[in-house]
Image (tube, rainbow, N blue to C red; front, side):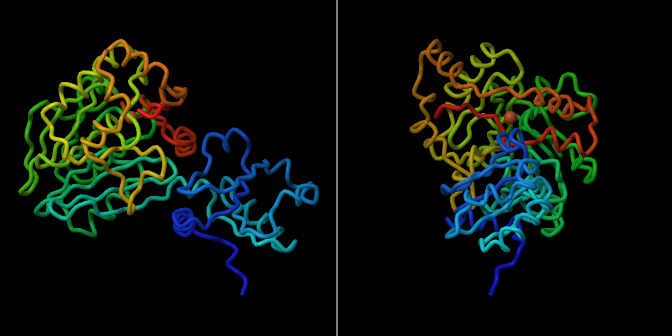
Length: 374
Ligand SMILES: [Fe+2]
């Protein structure tokens, strides 16, 4: 029996996770391909020939496709990849097309339960490595670092019958557009961000203040100021056990301190946070980050680590001399895409792009971490 012509993003993710993807044919133009290359837990072969170079020249390229491996075709919206999969099938290849192309893939989320009491859900935007959280206790909920596709979060909130009390942005996001204020608007919850990040914001907000303890059902969220990735980066300590670090500490990276320009000053803040501000927190504190560098970081669907893991395994955590720390950071900075400045403006309420522009701003994987193993 012939396989379906189209596979859904869910099925594609399942195959990526179970080492069933062998060959991906990507029809996007070279820049889009480079910016948002599909990555998996396991290695597979990828061929990129832009659609305009492929159409009409198919016969010339056929020798580049394997006869003995399944092929997944991918394009921007899912149309040309479907025609291409059909054509390859007629030529005897085992080809299927990814539904909705990169457009749909970029909006594909997975939701996994991290803990029962308090209830924690991790909502993971697979293609970009962006993570949001729902925390709940006794029917009250807090949302951390909401993505802009707020329906993904709100559907879960409704399913669980929760009342959203707080919405937090751990920092002014530069890589993706926050859905935090929208959720606060829909639910009537209080929206929080640190004033060092939101001083120029065009909206009103509640101030994240070091040491404040906010009740949530029978749980408590303590505000732990942890600047460095940005001057206003703030962590949320839930019941003295779970630490929502934003981008300060991620599973295989530490948050870059240069996205706002002042990298030496911000590196000093980062150093102080890692070695002083987090000092009182025990090694078994569970870190729940806002970004992942790759889907390889998921274990049973969840991205998490302990503070002890970070202290033991991060190279940056071993450098106590600030000069060397700064050198290490400076040599580990990935590109700072121009669009990040626009995203910061959107998140300050100073720019309102339309849907097309919004999608363009969010192309590719997040670049919030450093490139070296940190
Ligand atoms: Fe960030």
